[in-house]
Image (cartoon, rainbow, N blue to C red; front, side, top):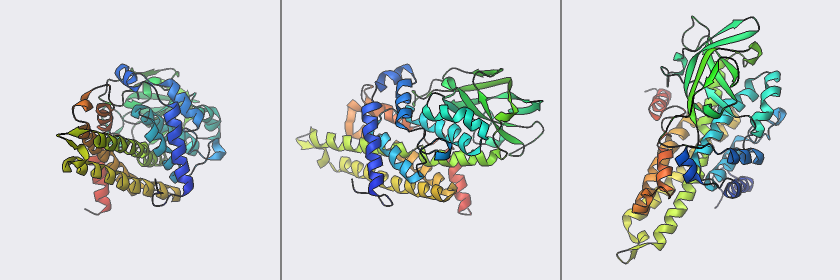
Amino acid sequence: MSAPLGWSEEHLALRERGRDFARAQLDHDVVAADRERRFPREAWRRAAEFGLLSAPIPAQYGGQGLDRLSFSALLEGVGEGCRDGGLLFALGAHTWGCAWAVAHHGSDALRDRWLPGLLDGSVIGAHGATEPDSGSDVWGLRTTVTVEGDEAVLRGSKTFVTNGPVADVVLVYARTPGTQGLHGVSSWLVPADAPGVTLGPAMETMGLRTSPVGELFLDEARVPVGNQLAPGATFHFQDSLEHERAFLFAPVLGAMTRQLGECVAHARRTRRGGRRLTEYGGIARRLVDMKTRIEAGRALQNRAALALDRGRAPEEANLAKVFLSEAWIDSCRDAMAVFGGSAFLVEQTRERELRDALAGPQYSGSSDVLRGVIAGVLDL
């Protein structure tokens, strides 16, 4: 492919490197893993060895220090080569929800204790913000934390914790009793084996089944006071969330590219009524729409990455997330139409891709909520 706007030959090489690695090392029986709702630990280990977990983390904290645009190109390639959307989602949640926050907002002691394992994949991280009564209203959380001597005591529960059932450590947001809204909220690293911590089993989900999601229960869970991240939990959360929204769908761009190539190849070789599928206007229009979404999505994705390299990117990240999460669903539906009846077979890729895609407009901020945020920027 020619270099997209803003990309150099180095970015193209990173994309190719990510694609080749994923094809060779992340290829496992996704159909079986999806059916069994099995977390692919071996593929996780290989992704970590490749450097996928350490790539965006600054070099002074043990990472590779890849800039955001370069990391975006690498992720796109990995997404093209890897057919396990759940694994890629789990890797992203670990990186932005936990490792990134520890690297940028943790103390030197917390970095020394947790970052080596978070970056080499031996420690699986999770992020506990959502609660049963506070989803999009994150700052309506009810989990509390009180300091008793040299320990912090956490009481409450979290839900929809990505990686929760397999996590070794969870970054938990809690509030000081008697406070409201974003005031009085702090963030704490809570080991899964800390006293009073219980990780619930994996929930049954429609898609992304290789990415376990569950509940976290904190029954007077005790951690050292040194496990608190630097003051300013609101900023920590927004920083992690902007990166998550900007990068969770970079692999999807690669998956959409792979999907389009497979649809074009199928349409060229398949005949109905003596004509190739590509000769039917309806099919051709679907393929053109799929291509258009890829190019438009990549422009928004790269814009968000470049903005983050310069500092903050709330608007750019929100726009990229809303567009790509919905474009992925539309392209999956187009792929179903191109492949026809065979797309409904579980052994094929199509139905699983669509199930995985349907969650996109909900996680990391729902599309409806983010449209409201974007409307505010437009002064509507």
